[in-house]
Image 1 (cartoon, rainbow over the protein chains, first blue to last red):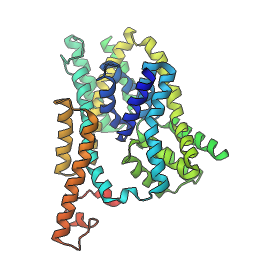
Image 2: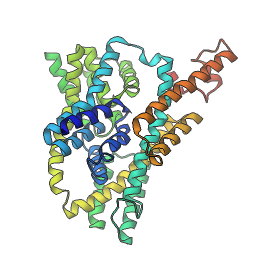
Image 3: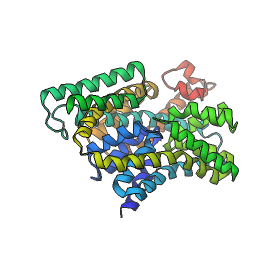
Image 4: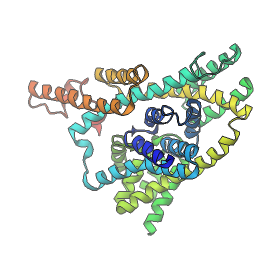
Length: 185
Length: 207
């Protein structure tokens, strides 16, 4: 039953995501690609689309994966499942606990969570690098030398431009798509 | 009822005009929720962000739920959250429906090869910036490299890794707080970092 499975996957992802939408990446990757529901390439294509369309990235990813696996009902179920843990926990906090963040143990746990989450997000960067940029990665198709140089160039240039000028990711993604069509077509 | 419709429409607009992560919506949230409707003060918004960051779920959704709850209880929470996710649901469904059709097109394939390389570049920079913000001491580096290696080299599942990070944080920082307290009983946790900047996170003190 794909709908139940979607609900389960995204409820779990929502529950264990602490921080921004990118923190959903490692868990979502494990739950979808790891479980063989979607391919690695599709996953990172979805990420690119989620980053360049309106709405929180985590929600966009949920809607997207939900749609791929269960069409429109799948999209709705995945999205609702993703937000359900937020609604429950925040409702309880907003209603009953006004100084949640002042609790020493909560703060210490958060100080542990944050670097751990960074390490997990770094795995997302690592996997996309290994799969799509570095030659001979396990999922990358064999490339000619020239294409490989273009891919490496797009990688370096996007990192540089993003670091230096902080444009919105949508511009870099559109630019890289155009570069891909021109130089890799 | 009026207020519920307003909650849906305000958060719908915020969702629609936020491209990127939860932080990208802060200016929009300030304009709509603080300046236009005066539902919350600026300080309350920042507190909600702090809470939204440290509770399960995506920040943007947590903020919407929080504002909704404060305005209209549970129905308000649901209305605000619904408003926030509706633009994603509509736009992404349309794109996904269209995308599966043209994914196998040769141009689209080349475009996405380029895009994947760019996403890798963006992620590397985003991670580097997060390290600067979130990793402030030795334990932070250990947890970060530990989580990375556990997942990449040992294929550890994600949930136990994040939970373990929290547990280690509680044990380690509690031990430090206890030690500081013993060393100078008048030093409570709040002013400890002034003496030992390595052991407490400035960010938290500001909150």
